[in-house]
Amino acid sequence: MATLTLTKTRLQAGIWEGVMTWDGAGNLQPDLVALHLDQPIMGISIKEDPAGNAWNVQIPVPIEAISDGVHTIVVIEKGSGETLTSFALIAGEPLSEDIRTETALLRAELDMLKRAFRRHCLETMG
Image (cartoon, rainbow, N blue to C red):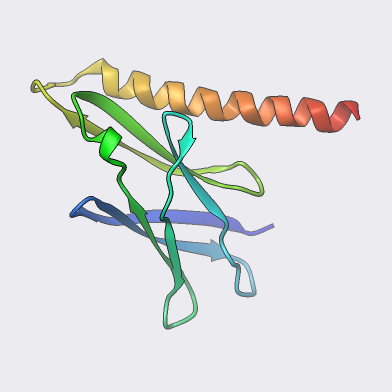
């Protein structure tokens, strides 16, 4: 199985952009989902790089994530449930070395792990 890597290139005008690469042969068609507050984000764009060795990914930042506090977006590969990357948006009062960012990221990761574990249990019981 190929190892997927999703690397951020920039965040501009409300669009997170990155490049997805993989080790291994062949042209892999990515199947990604981005989650905010455990809800899928609509409008993800995945286009093959003209060179054919990578995919350009664009994820629109939902308007709900642009509000006071810390909001985390997690990007996972649907088939494996593997977390490829995540990013946090912080707004409102200045937050210097705030533990809330790390806590929000850990919560998002824990939610993803719980879903994967439940899916695994259902698959192995049946």
